[in-house]
Length: 175
View: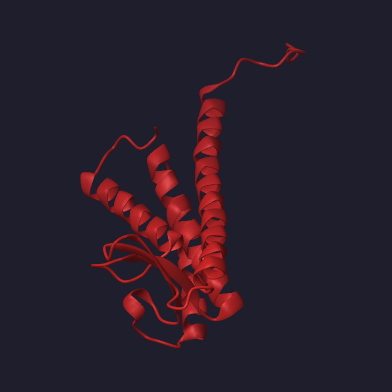
């Protein structure tokens, strides 16, 4: 009977796959954490600076781009105003769905992991506002679009990347 060697064995393909999976998971977690921090910091800065102004707004590029403080008590585009509890429950459900869906992607590209991190970070950032304040702070005001924030942007970009990935139908998901 042979004894097991006293020194570690060379890395196997499984250990490489595990390392790649951890890097991809780390990319999702790092991205989500970064978005939450950026979202919360920019919202607090918007509150601090914009609420001191009589109209709650600062022009950046004429009327095309402004920073405008809005306490959004509704959903996207201001629909369903004053449904705070509903939005907290929906936010928790969305975060849960994102976390559960992660499990069903056996091999994901780094970009797809970042997309999931963007969605997760955005959902957490807006949920934090809803729980603490009962509304979401929005402040990026592009003339042709409703006022939004960093979390909203992250969610939209993350969903866009995910949609592109799904439409592309790539078999190359282990990158």
